[in-house]
Structure formats: C-alpha cells, structure tokens
Amino acid sequence: MPELPEAEVVARQIRARLLGAELRDVWVGRADIVREGYNTVSWYRGASLQSVERFGKSIVLGFTKDQAGRYVVAELGMTGLLLFQSTQTKLPQHVHVRLLFDCSSEPELRYWNPRRFGRLSLLDKPGLERYLARRFGLDPLSASQQDFVRLLQVRRGRLKSLLMHQQVIAGIGNIYANEILFRAGLHPHVQVNRLSVGRIEKLYRIMREVLAEAITCGGSSVRDFFAPDGTEGQYKRRHLVYGKDGQSCPNHCGGIIQRFQGERSSYFCPRCQSLRSTK
Image 1 (cartoon, rainbow, N blue to C red):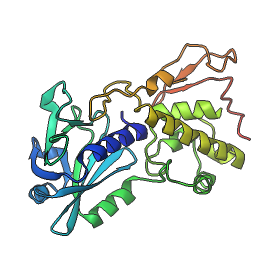
Image 2 (cartoon, one colour):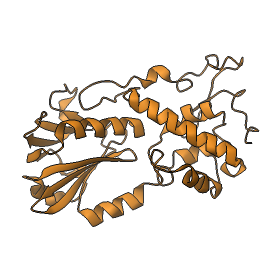
Image 3 (tube, one colour):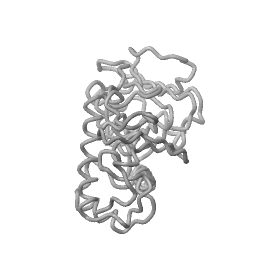
Image 4 (cartoon, rainbow, N blue to C red):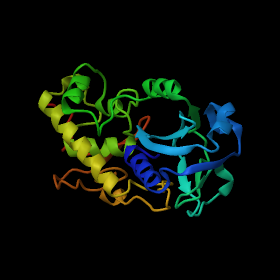
C-alpha cells in the first residue's frame, strides 16, 4: 500500500511535469471510481493545473478555470497508482481515469487501480475542506514537535495503532510504523499514555527522519508501487525489520526479529523493543 513517502514522491513528480498544463479532456472508464462529484466532470475540461499537494496518502490536484477553482482528490488506497502515459501499465483494463493535458511534458495522467479500494473525488473548495477535516489528522512532516507531544499526551491505546490511525496522524501505514518503532526502540503494543515526554520527542525525530529518508529513496516498492514515471522506490533495501521475521536483529543485540500477526503484521525485536521501555 502506498504510504506518505510514496504519495509525496507522486505529488512531486506530477508537480514537476504537469503544473500549469491545461486539461484538454477527461476520460472516466467507470462511474463508480468517482466517489463524489461525477456530475462535474465536464467543468474540468479546459481548466489549468495550478497546484499539486499531498494530504496523508492522497494527492490533491487543484484546477482553475474562469477564476473558479475545483479539485481532484486521488486516493491511492491499497493498489492505486497515478501514472504518466510514458509508463508501461500492466493490466491496462484497470486504468479507470485518464486526464489528457496540453502544453506539458506529459500528455496524460492515468489513475490505475485494480482492487478499487481508492477512489477519486471531484470537489469544490468547501467540499475539499470537509474532505480533509474528515479524513486526515496531524501531518508528520509539517507538525511541530510541540504539537506531536501534545497530541500523544492526551491519547490512549497501543502506539502502533495510533501511528496508523489516519484521523490522528495522517500518512503512516504498516511499513513505516514498523520501521519507525524499531529505530525508536519502542514496542508496537506499548501504551501511549505510558510514554515520557523524552520518548515522545525521540519518536517525533525518528518518525521524520525515516519518512524523509524514504522520500529521498523514492519510497518503498514492496509490491505494486511505482512512481508516475515508472521508477521503483528503493527504500525497501533499507528496511530493518519489515518482512525480516526470523532474521537476526540488525542492532546485533542477539535477538531475532519476530512477527506478531494481528490486523496488520508487526515486526519487532523483543530485546530492543521491550514493553517496559517507555522513559
């Protein structure tokens, strides 16, 4: 599943190649891929792309026409991709939307999504504001340390579940939650309200370091993720615990990476990530 780093890579590539381009036409292969605003498709023809932003794991394309603005929100979901025309697409029947541009280095942006857990939403400004308020919590890359500490101090429950709760902290999924917690020396099931301020501040720093490093590496192409230009993310080569169950701990502590099978698999070292380590 694409997470924050992958979505950020997507946004940056689209911004670099399509910003300012005019949307000549929109092709929608199946109406149910548009969650909201399908009846406004015609408005987008002739509009220019003026902004490309990432919110959580979603991409927001901002268009203007005749001094009015509207947005296309692309949820990547489990298997969704935004791909340029120049990128070869396996199973092309799963390209459900095509945005055709003029005056750009890429003539087409495609929304490919075989499992269709993600959707597109076509929204005006108030609709976008409601969408963002409903779906996304604090952004790990833009939130201050003070805001992060304050947020965790009033929460309860298991830490890994909190990191992955999109309405609390937006963008972190299973891959990066595992990697962040290992580097922070925190057990996935530690109770949030037991963490000291010092531990939360360390978690904040490591969270941002891991996400920034992953973005620099193009994200993690664990299964089906490709950037719009078809490149694979190389951060998977730097994973320390995700998918490493049964292997020796990279900290050379003598422990073996274990996998806890729950709603989402947790990978951790029982020696480096003790439940008692909270201060």
